[in-house]
Length: 441
Image 1 (cartoon, rainbow, N blue to C red):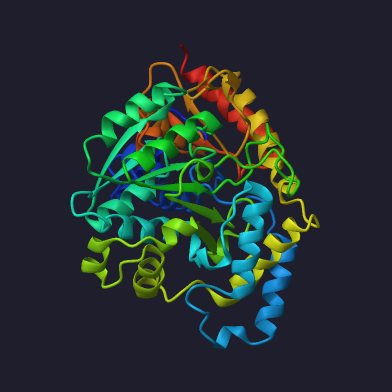
Image 2 (cartoon, rainbow, N blue to C red):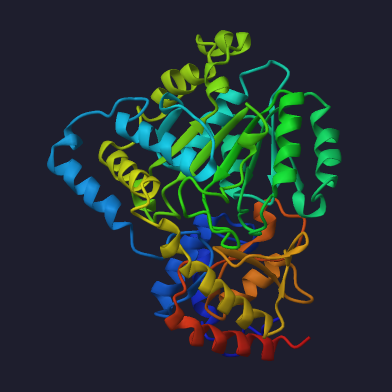
């Protein structure tokens, strides 16, 4: 470990002072937002700019199509009126068309509903799913995954089960999931694809397994497509042409797709997303749901009772922005994936720099395929736990989060590439060389 009395790129006094001020005893167990606050404070105290890898925020300019559409909507005065609760008509139509063009699924506009970011979409679907059957009070996480979604489960007072899918790929997935689902208490299944943080991608045969089991055991699948189309090994950017975004929607009627504007369109600040719900699920009636919320239809309860209660709908002008980019992409006027391929270029360089200085990739393959370069990758360092590695890297001006926060069974950290432009790669290399020199294997 680093001798905290010897000079490091970030003086130890600033780190210890920030930890004390914020009451953080162990950065390895801190939440993403706590690490963000910690590093902000250390930067303020030290004047040293970190290589920020802890939070998945866009590092590219927002879509001009989106910003222009929102400006036009604001100029027309939409900010003074409430949006329709279930969404702007043109956004609902555009979302339905976008899903058909890039996922090849038929979902009617009425079943496409905007939310205040995909996080709100997961939260309200969790809430409703926990009220579908009296005996089903548990959400199954196919991990590793987005840490805040487990916090949502805790806020709701529900239970969750989880397993690390890296150890149960392909046909092994069916056996593992069956052993959990046959207990009869699973209300919903959640995962991200591409995966946050491992960037591994569930394949069609695995999605078929998930879909078939969801139907067999009557559970809702919440498919988080926060990184829509960003498995750059497959170019899905051409509308109405294969290949399409992989989805469980081809294998079950019990599904909800969460499509975020934050990463694919770099529109995170406006907090707008859509949940695209299977028409059959949207219309399905659940007697216990009626007992709990006064409305038994999934879609009606989700929108009219729950979404209404938590936000009265998504921001009015932001809905125009998302509608515009969906429409432009569907009509072939806007290749949204061309812009975000920059993340793959950064990931390739950053992986090379880390592995060249004795770091190792934790999730290092995607079944028989090489791991894709994208928004995230995962790292370990010989002889260190994830918490120890995170703590040590802070002294070298590098921040991240631990894999334990994501439900991973592996030791290490998650690295996000979005905030590190190519102009800072030399700086990262210098810090990593110094780190490896002082932490000889």
